[in-house]
Image 1 (cartoon, chains in turn brown, orange):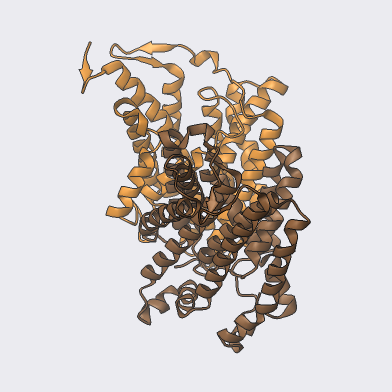
Image 2: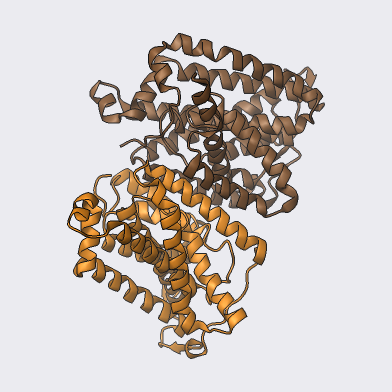
Length: 328
Length: 295
């Protein structure tokens, strides 16, 4: 039994329209998204925006797994944090340039994703969530003790370096546009995957795994590939975060981070293209607004979880897409 | 001095005892999780938070009402159990029939709220809770020194586990519960109030967690986050044992506690990860869990 999630608000619309039309209906909102991203750094502090972009990419990568394959991973902090550590270590200790440092992080996450996914897809549904959570917690304890992570201090002072060895990434505005480019690459990659034949099979596995298997698809292989893709893209987000904030820390591998990314996707809308982006922006705003109240952030996050599950399962974009009667 | 594999026998036995204590808590918590999952089809992420509420309840009772350990052992689980029943009635009831991951997400949110509120009022450092005077001190067994309170915790846990097993497997109420786990609709057709049974079960499972919390209070400090990391270990225990069998979750809980204790003696670096490593190995060898039916 694969977890069946209430996702397809525009299912009826999708049923009628072929995939090409669906991509066309995404064109307008995509243009709006890009326009907003281009203007935003001149209005809002770029570092804050970069934080949003990193989380948005992380949420999109997570949504690929939960929204389109129906697998709830409670351990995605592992990939986010591990990539951050490796990128930080590569840039600081090995002195690798920006591109190679980020690649090191992404490759680490992909390999870890392969290992964790290979173990976790042996069990389904709710057990999958518990296994990923437990493996991530194991990795957290490893990071707590391993010498290269710096324990409680984390890896501090990660150099931003130069893009292609030419353009310094120290100015926040330059860094912002690089992060934006990487985010858009990840975003379009995910959109492409979702609307590819491969993505259709993923959805088939989500809706009815035994039937997908009976049609000759090896469901486990599809799940594993999706898991590795999601892990690698989460790693990309984690790597960027480490470079932007010049810090890789234990928080990024702790289960609270896994919880946060789930909340973003849930609030924005499971299985929607733009939901994770909106959810990430909303949660980052809520967190920074309530940061002055200290511990209450956790309470608000928990409350949002409860409200979303009880009364708002489609999420912001899911509801919007239902009202507009078009997939978003 | 006698040694086993280079470790003094006293150190070995005292770590074994610590392992047994942890195992008691694993067993009580995974037992509650298994019962709740059986009937409600929900993995109760808030279980660690209810464990913490049990301990916190005992501390509050002592601090504000002067009620000591012995009454608290009954009152605190009762209050927390009622609170759990209330949550079942108002929230969990409304997501019945949905995919179980929503239950996991909802109870995760509840855990965040409970722990967050606790942290705002009590801080993270925690408060000490004195053990009852009747159980302070210890007994010298010749080969080791046995603190009375720890012996008491292990004893009570074993009795509680046995009692729960007896209620579920051997009484009429337990037979309703097992039947409702198999086919709630049919049981309801026989005139048994299944929704009430479900509320009762959730309350019972939560109460067990709170009771474990009260017993843990004198051993660990009472802190709002004491259940947060514990629940993840208990999840691993549940994956290893499989949630299909009551006896299986009790046995796995105790066994993993002991293994963890032994690891502390022979290879301390791995003591916090050994349960997860065992989980990975079990997944490789027997994916359904040691006592599990195929999920």
